[in-house]
Every structure is written in C-alpha cells, then in structure tokens.
Length: 254
Length: 226
Image 1 (cartoon, rainbow over the protein chains, first blue to last red):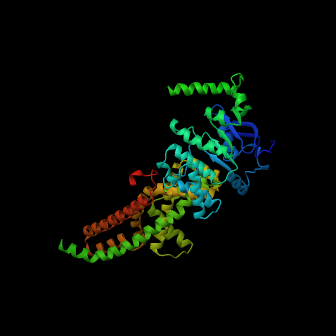
Image 2 (cartoon, chains in turn brown, blue):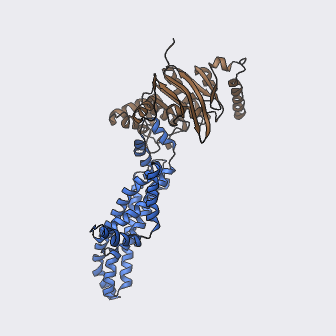
C-alpha cells in the first residue's frame, strides 16, 4: 500500500511581477491518484500547474518525477520530462491551422520521431478513445468547445504521459458540454492515470478525488480526502468555500 | 495620333522586355526581403535583447531613408567602396530586397504577435523545443496571416522598382524614357508604361490571392478570402 510517490513537489515558490504567487508549496502524488486543486481565483492553482511542467520556471523548490529531480536549465531532459507530464488547458490551446488528426499527431512526429503513418495510427486511436473518431478531418474552428477539449486530451494522451495536469478543463465550456469532458476524464482516472486537476466541479470532486488540496494566497492551507474536508461537521475552509460555490451555482441556474 | 500608334507598336515589345527585368528585380527583391524579414521578425519577438536591438536598428535605418537615397548610397557608394562590381539591375534588386526585408519583418512580426500565445505553451507542454514550436506552430499561422500584407508589399515594391532606372538598369521606366526622348511621344509611352505596371500589379495580387485561398484553413485568419 505504501507506494513511493510518482511526483513529489517540495517548497515551490514563484513570484510574478514582483508579487508572490506561490509561497512554498509541497505535496506528493502516488501513481494512479487523483489530486484536486480547489481555491479562490488568484490562489495559485494555475501557476502551480504551470510550474509543475516548467511553463513557468519556479524561483525555488524541487519537482521530482519518479525520484528524479528536474533541472529546467537543461533543455533536453526538460523536453523529455514534459513529454511525460501531459497538460490540459482551460482554453484548449489547439493548434488552429491543423485539423484534429494533425493536432494529435504533430508531437508524435516531431518529438517522438514516429513516421507519419505510425503517428497517425496512434492519433486515430487516441481520438477514438475520446469519442472523436469521425472528427479527425475537422479544424478547431469547426469543433465545439467540448470536442476541442477532448482533442486536447487525446493530444496529451498520445505522448504516453505518466502524470496529467488539468487546469480547469471545463471552466470555459457551456454547461451542456461539461459532461462529455468529465466523462473522458473519469474514464482516464479509472484506467489508472495519475492526475492533478484544478476544478470547481464539486460533484466530480466528491466522487473522483483521492485528495483535495485547498489553495489560497499561494499556499496549500488544507489537505485531505473529500470525505474529511467536505463533511458538514468538518468546519473546514474548503467546505465554506464550496458552499459559496454551490450557492453561486444554484443562483446562476435559476 | 497615327505617329503615336506607330511608335507604340514598335516600342511595346521593347518595353515588355523591360518588364522582364522589372519582374526579376521585384521577385528577387521580395525573395531577398523574405529571407531577411522572416528571421528578423522571429528575432524581434523571441530573440535575446542584443538581437532584438540589432533588428530594430536595421528596420529603423531602412524605413527611415528614401529608396532613391539608398540606391545611390549602395550602388555608387558602398558597393564601390568594397569593390563589389555588380550590374545595375542586381544592385537595384539587392537594395530593394534589403529595404523590403525591413518592411516584411514588420508584417511578419505583427502576424506573430497576433497569434494566441497559449498555442506556444501547448507546444512546449508536449515537449517541442522553442525552435520546433516556432517552425511548426507559429510560422505556418503567421505566414498565412501575413499574405494580405505581403501582397500589399509586392505592389509597393513593384512601383519602387521603377527607381532602378536611375542606376541605369534597363527596366520598364528606363526603356520608356529612352524611347520617349527620341520620339517625343511622352504621353503615349508613359501611358504604355502605366498599362504594363497595372497589369503586373493585377497579376501579382491575383496570384497571391489565389495562394491565400489555397492555403486557407477553415475558421482561421482572413475569412473573406474564401
């Protein structure tokens, strides 16, 4: 049961424009675990995720994947590390000039150096996995938000990541499209993918999260299972925040 | 009137020969401008500070001086100084190309800056190097967005190329002048030159339009192109 962690984060600090965004974040993730980041906007969730694959280079702190510390100054190992850590963005960031198939196969050809035929075969398999087998010829502008996000998930999965980082993957979606994306993520979790996900989809968090990290002002101020933190008796900051979230959501639905 | 038509009929094949040289200068100039302008635009957006400053200086210089002055400066000045003995047409092509490079770099730079930044991050997150992200993601999009500006640059460069005649290159304008001073048919010959420039502009702009449609991506860039 006591498995060594696949990803360890120690004392991560990051300031942007002179303002501290992360102030010493530490945690570790075991293989197959689903960690959820919750907290007010500006609390550092997005910056944390971007620091985890060095899209932002942290000012201090260590990130270890399978025991191996990452040195962002060394290009080759950094690019290799990024292949192993998939990233899903709130606004998809699909490549606008490429159709769905090329979006997924590009990095396979350019980074993994597969032949076009091999890359496209793999890309088709990943598109089928997210339910978009018949959309491979469509360009981003021709896809719905939910479809775009599923293409971006297929694109990340094609690289065989060991960990996936998801930065509010449903926040930009119309409510009726959220389900299709969450379904894909749920499937992924069941298949054993290790994930760190910022989200405010509380139903999803309750049923899927192994642990919640509540972030505020650049720190993890609470940490625990959904049962612990979301228990009505817990009196946790997380519960308080989520109850406001629920009020807001039900208020918006009326 | 009769005489004018006679002169024209004789002169037109000669003028069209000059159009050949004009095309060489313009196509060469656009090509050289692309070779100079594209890396410079990339350097200005992604390069280190010294490279950015150097590109900025280049653009500032070539945009700040009239082409006529540049032609004299290089052909009679710098090329002589360095004993680079090239013909008038080649010299004009090089100067037009260097100038166009400055303008083209700003067309490409604007296009690069207009792209959604997130795509570069997505490419990095997949393990692409910065160089690969620029080559595979940024440039294919930026070049598509640049085509309307590039077509504009073509039409400007085509007309600037008429200045090559001051160096003695026997392009359209030089030949027009040559015939006109001997036959006194200035109006007719100038109109003929107008006609040739007009056709060259029209054909070039149409061709670039066709290219724009050919490489268009659904929902991306200039929608009226389709």
